[in-house]
Image 1 (cartoon, rainbow, N blue to C red):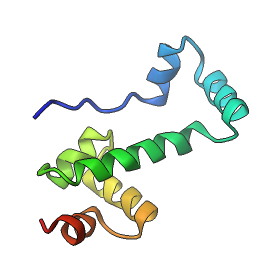
Image 2 (tube, rainbow, N blue to C red; image 1 turned 120 degrees about the vertical axis):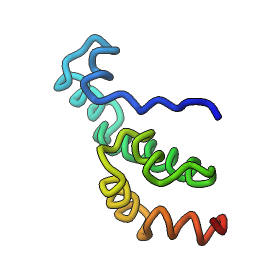
Image 3 (cartoon, helix red, strand yellow; image 1 turned 90 degrees about the vertical axis):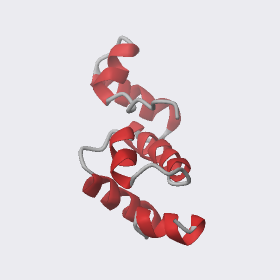
Length: 95
């Protein structure tokens, strides 16, 4: 299985764009009408759904997605979907 690196932080994204964090977040909101944090959360959520189809542990998925703990991942996942990652995986994939 290919090693998956955690996504860059907002600070790292700003550095890659050679902008300050403030300028990046303001410019993103002006150009898209959405907060960059909302976009990051949406991309993380889609990535989580893909990874939950694999045999990776919930803890490994959490760290892969850049969460500090599996509990914080579970909280964010439940907030977005209404169910825990384990329940989502079991109800859809049976494992």
